[in-house]
Length: 143
Image 1 (cartoon, rainbow, N blue to C red):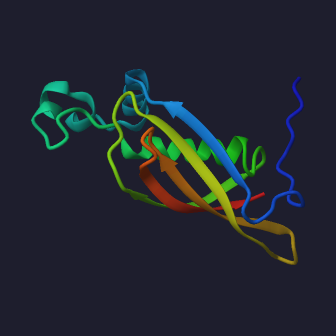
Image 2 (image 1 turned 135 degrees about the vertical axis):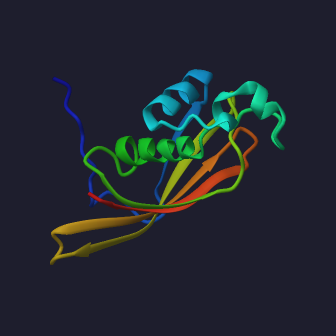
């Protein structure tokens, strides 16, 4: 069995950053529609989407947020992290073929319950291949 290294409170510093990137495919869109039940024609119907202001299908906005979960759970802070809350604003549409990069930056460290609960406030942004912010927000996690 592979040993998983858990997030280390003492090593995490304000200003630390983690990254996770992925090129979004049609398969990603279809799988997300299936798991979420969101078959809005803006996402799944090419003919419908041609006649919208975007001229083509857009990827579900929450897909970009899922990349944030990948950073928080696997990179920074990393395994053992519990995602408590997520504020998010969708700034630009995401299209099939876009390459997204989620960036997490530690803003604040604090404890509650006499140090038994360790919290991190984290800035969460997702950029497309043109370095435009498509999603921004803030997360609260416990490690």
